[in-house]
Image (cartoon, rainbow, N blue to C red; front, top):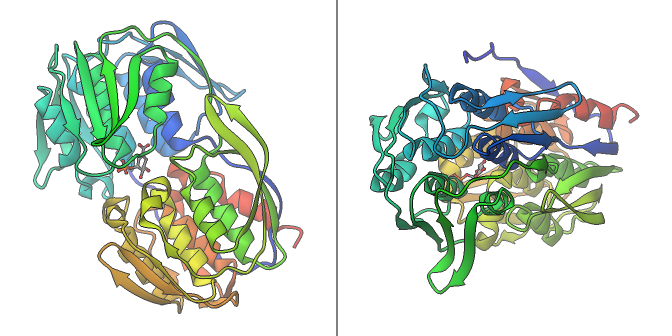
Length: 443
Ligand code: S3P
């Protein structure tokens, strides 16, 4: 997938945001739905799948390994799986584009199948560390050759039968946990992951929903997730809730732009994902949850966000795993709060689609915000609700969340903010700018 040419976009303040938006399907859940449906025997249907580039990379990879994956105009995807153990040797390298989740989870699937797959990716993904999955998957018997520094391109030669392991996660990573559990699906015996810090639990929930033998227990070593391999997965009808990581941009935009009132429909509020809303409420944000319900086994509600004065907080490090993708936009909220917000304990931000600590320090600094950079986070002194100066061009660094967070900042800036390249937004939220126009057109 060659990158499209960079598309700069200028975002100027345009008054309040008002209206109702529906965010696209959850990216994490969409990846998992395609993978598990691709391993079930029979036809699964998926409603609300995120049709962003990252998820489409997973769909293409599952097709390349034998699953039948069809989109449809009515938005319902149909998948006919190959059965556990049935993945086929892909004819070509699997192009993962920008998607770390596709790469790490699919590496887990390949690791316990008798196939070999080569994973490639774009310039951003090719800088990201893969050692974190190489180590446990190698312990299970996979033979993995990565590029220097444990990067892509990476060749995974699976072992079948693989060896079950018990593995304690050295980094809080749902991708690593999921890679091991997915490898465990086609491994005889019990594969066990111990996570000292709880991370998003979509894999466990969905594996259980497909009929896999999964158990979760609390222990003094952390949360223990065990999977007994070689059970058959039963096809499912999955409804994917809206992505809280996409809703986050409207929650912050509605909070910082005076006069705003935004309803965000159908937001997934799994407690392992909803940390940003808690942090914003600590800052004084006015976010109401309406019509709480369950969608596809996940808690969901509509959120009504009204402009409110924000005050600085010390962001609790223990919220980090449940808002790890939301720090860029949390930093933007902090830029408009009264006082100095300190958000630390988020070292993992250094190895996301970009180094998000450095990227946001540079972007906010260029827009006239007082920022102090730490190894594991930022301190930001806010304007007390006034617009930030803006007037800069910022580098999005092939990182969708940097582009969207800085677009939100531009909505309350004295001079427009130019994002050097808006194309990465298509990885997780293709309709982002159209939705923004819709929310501001009556202003
Ligand atoms: C994800 C886990 C997180 C997150 C990523 C999606 C997942 O990554 O940042 O966007 O779907 O499992 P880590 O596992 O590296 O924390």
